[in-house]
Amino acid sequence: MKLQKLEANSWYILGGFCSTHAHSIYSIQVRTNAQIVAQTSAAFPEIRAEATSLAHDLGGIIQAAQKDPAQAGRLFGIDEMNTERKKKSLKKASLDLAAASKDADVRALSLKIKALEHALDKEPIIFSPNRAAVPEGYSSEYIVYEHDYSDPKRKREDALVEIISLLHMFDDHTSEMPTIAWFYRALTLGRVLHDIGLHSEALQLERLNTEVIQKLAEGHGNLYDPDLAASLLNLSKSFSEVGRHEEALEAIQKAVSIMQGLSEKDKDGFNPVLAGCLHDLSVHLSNLDKHKEALEAIKKAVTINQALSEKDPDKFNPVFADSLHQLSFILSNLDRHEEALEASQKAVTSMQALSKKHPDRFNPDLADFLNGLSCSFLTLGRHAEATVHIQESIALFDSLLKEKQIQEYDRNFGRALETYSDVLEVTGQHRKALEIARKAVTIFQNHSGILSQVETRDLDVLQRRITHLEFT
Image 1: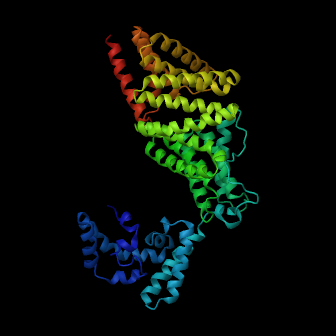
Image 2: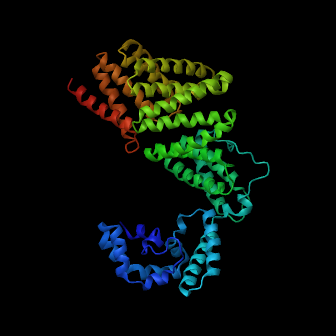
Image 3: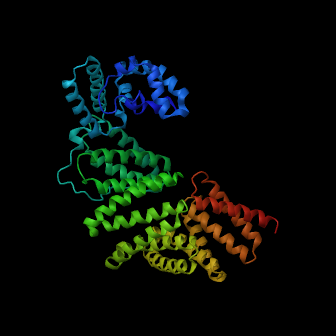
């Protein structure tokens, strides 16, 4: 346990004397170090030596707090408070100061008030009252900031320029952009960064954006709940893309919880977003091998999306097909292969119809869905059908690569190559199976460190297959 951690909740750590009353840090300073050591060691016998060291360092910590409001803020735990709590704490400390009679208490409370005022003054300009105010006519709904990123050659450059612009406006005294408008721009930009492969940049922006909407929501009840859910949904995707799957799951669980509450009040308005959150919840659970929980989530998403697609097929058929594809994947992981095949066939049929109308938009999904269908046939020993569909998938992926609609190391392409290698091996084409398996391994290794548990196992299987094929 480090000194910084012991400092975090200072009134408890500094002897435990001040959890509810504002006893002076000066009076703590003159209390016997032996008493502090005894109390801390009794609670944490395994850190007796560190407790002794901490007691000797108290004087230095307190003196630093007297000179530096930021250090005092850390000492009082102010850094852990949100804005609303800081304001309440400041009001209470001011009342306590008016009633204080002991010089030591007056000095302690004065220091705390100074630290709180310093912390509130340091709030970024984006949270100034005029920018953080709810805009006239604001409607709490899922709004997308419109920006033209359609030119692939300029998409990356435009996105990076937009980041610089956004961060400048974050603390710009001359900007009049409302905080919620800044949030929507960042929300859209996060998706763009994700799409063009700038995952670390997307994660940094989306973490900041989530903090912005959480802070903006303080004192406004549930007004910004849809926006917070949208931000958490984006954040979960970015955590997943950099291999932080536990944090991705935590973020999406919060988003689902918010959307479930909203959906209970307005199903027509919020069920589409709830279904999307449930779909992603299933993905993140599956990434952590929690397939039974993933099945529960995706079944709910399928039910919602099916009802939506029946009312408005043009709008909701794509998400319904996507949820069926995810359902097939989860069922396969639970060895329910006949059911997985049925779901996959429905997903492919739906996606084929969509791809005929809008090939540029839906061909990448169709290539992935065909791979899933081939996997289902292969698992059930239907090799001829598996071969037909994986060849269609690979041909489509090759076309997408030539047209630069996907990147060379696209993970879905890697999974399709893995399936193709499987099919080639079981049909006796060992030399070609080895060649394809090596290509798949190269793609997965390019994503080392961010693979899900399922993908990590797939990579291990591929490497063992290569060893086997090399001696066949």
